[in-house]
Amino acid sequence: MSKLTKKAIVASFVSLVSKKPLDKVTVKDIVEDCGITRNTFYYYFSDIYDIVDELLSGLGEEYDITHTGGWEKGFRKTMQFALDNRRAVYNMYNSSRKNELMVCINNAMTRLIERLIDENPDSKGLSKKDKKLIVVFYRGAVVAYIVEWLDTGMKDSADEMIDRVLFLFEGSMDEAVKRAANDPRCMNKRT
Image 1 (cartoon, rainbow, N blue to C red):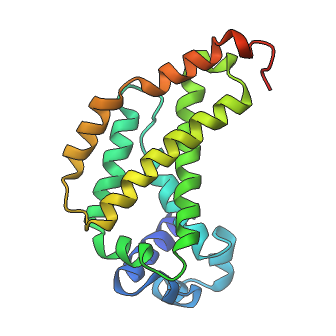
Image 2 (image 1 turned 90 degrees about the vertical axis):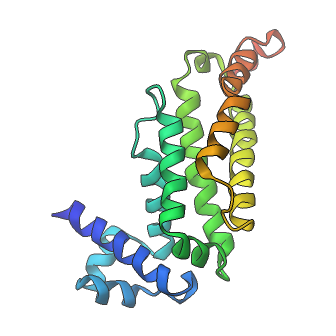
């Protein structure tokens, strides 16, 4: 029952944010739409942005990225969600609380990229500092590309965009992890 309630809250949120800006959606709106109590809402989520974080995490984790194609499938699923829920995405993105949304997006991308790095066998020799550098670099690139896509009205084909990114950058993160893990200048600095 608990997974159904949580999914209902997220679905209600997406429906509501499709109709009005993110900063106008309230916990009261969600509980009324779902037919639940405020206590039930707060059992699952601490606030509205906790739902956004759950939504973004769920999109990235719906596919097991540790298997071949997982990153690509997850990225495609996320972009398809944006297209299918264009109004909701714009209402979240263009709200007066856009900064909180960007924090959620960055956190979700950080978790996703850290999982990709951790799956790489070379990551065991990676310093924390280098891991953070790789995460920040790739997170920044992906988020900037998504923001550019949103700013231009999602006009470019998501599939074409993803295909091109994958073609141009395939293996680059793994190579960065390998180089950092095998850099003799850092062999004694693995913290």
